[in-house]
Image (cartoon, rainbow, N blue to C red):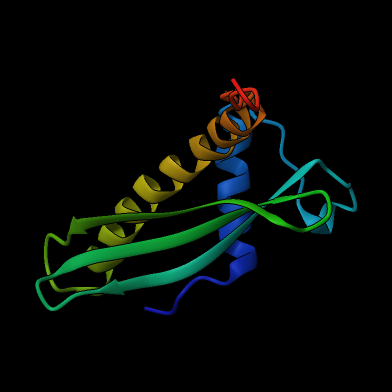
Amino acid sequence: MPRPSANALRARISSMLSAAETTVSRPVDGLAGDFQLAPDIRKFHSALNQMGEVELGAKLLDAKGRIIASRVARDAAPAQASTGPAVAAALNRAFAGVATELAAWPARAVTELSQPKSVIPKKAAGG
């Protein structure tokens, strides 16, 4: 089974983010957002044990294109048979799990990054 293109992957994750009521823009939309999600397909295959395996990396970029957070999500799903449709269904289930995880992650990451950092004051000199 061929790997999905990066654009197809972005479109699928974007639709899942939209369904989760999270505002999303893609570079092809011509909009400049505060953050951009850059996915990376690491694994998308059927293993010998008839498991559909999907592993995606994702980088969260700021408006200047700097990486501010990253994450790797993995999932696997068993194929009911070794036929093409069964393997495709397993890959689809594994992808859905990974995409769901990645769809929720950017909002949490931005929230965590925007929290004020606790600073421990240095002791006064001579004190």
